[in-house]
Length: 166
Length: 291
Ligand SMILES: Cc1cc2nc3c(=O)[nH]c(=O)nc-3n(C[C@H](O)[C@H](O)[C@H](O)COP(=O)(O)OP(=O)(O)OC[C@H]3O[C@@H](n4cnc5c(N)ncnc54)[C@H](O)[C@@H]3O)c2cc1C
Ligand code: FES
Ligand code: FES
Image (cartoon, rainbow over all chains, first blue to last red; front, side):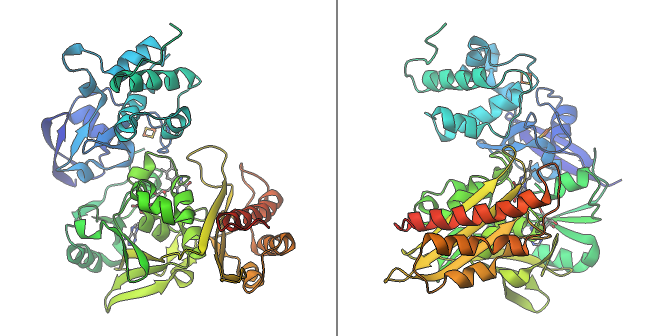
């Protein structure tokens, strides 16, 4: 077998293992780093549930990257969002606004949203829908996901929260 | 599914990548963003024996204007174009395309050069390269050569990149102040390949006649195609509604789309006409001309 050493800084912690070159990043994250928050939802690179951040701010589909390609890079997964159990404003907003039902798509939604708000702290509804268009959700119909991101954007930019109706 | 096993070569310089490709010949394949190659490998539609990863090559990650060309390096991501304010201000065709290729996550890995090298029958960057008359810089045994896009795109998934070679950058002539473009794409949903799409770029003379026209359609045959008859019809003429209609009517004559879940062949053929017409109209509007 074709095993190569791979070392990736995942959520600030260096994870090193020898894996086959064909190992997908998502499997390295789930099996080598034992972080199972990042999900796999499709075989066709189209659902976005596996989204993680590459080098801090780039959302990438970890099912469409080989682990060897992330060698020497930093990866951020959903587990990093709530240090000490304190929810990230996006997580709190998904809770408050019912931005999830089964929750399968949520890790990907959260990571894409983190990147979106880093790049554009005050997105319009249209920009949020555009920004999330690579993430599929089979449950919510998206409206509450959009509301969640609006609430988080408000909280994070210290403005008045968008949650006027609760 | 897991891709089949392969040997992985990490290249840090163009020299390293080229040496590995030369060594492995037919078995070797460039790995750029992986957004076409990895899905194909997961479906086992592709089983390359050796992958040469060019992502660590920092020298190939550039987006700059030089000697009349916009130069896009082989590891420059789609997102780099989408988020560059100066691209937004001056490149209307590229701006329009960079918002509709794949989805926003894929665009953080996918490269423009990789997409043109992939030469998918429904590729968006191939049609754009035709309309903007791009040139690909290819490294081969005898050094670098510049291949005009019309020669570069050979057949579905086949380009002028020969065994052991690699593409280094795509060069797009910088549009002047009298040039504007438009990209018209019909897709079932975000992230789907085009049902049909058209790329248009128009340049005007001072007297209001059309100096140059670039018109290409994609997802309408084995590869993206230049609608040369439409271009010829426009050049030298003053824009008018009749002229636009006549030029657009040339597109279905060369289109040979396959029927699939996105639509029938007849429907897609007619859409080439509709989209080319809309593209010319929008490019002219951006030039301040309402035909
Ligand atoms: C969900 C999804 C939706 C998509 N939708 C669209 C869409 O709507 N429109 C569209 O156009 N594309 C779409 N794509 C494809 C995407 O844009 C790809 O990123 C792009 O086509 C390939 O770029 P890459 O850098 O990822 O190339 P890779 O996948 O790494 O490579 C593709 C091919 O080109 C070759 N290659 C790459 N770089 C070079 C080089 N420098 N020299 C020689 N050969 C090279 C590789 O060997 C391989 O054969 C989609 C992809 C996904 C996953
Ligand atoms: S698992 Fe569906 S896109 Fe990665
Ligand atoms: S909450 Fe179930 S898929 Fe989104």
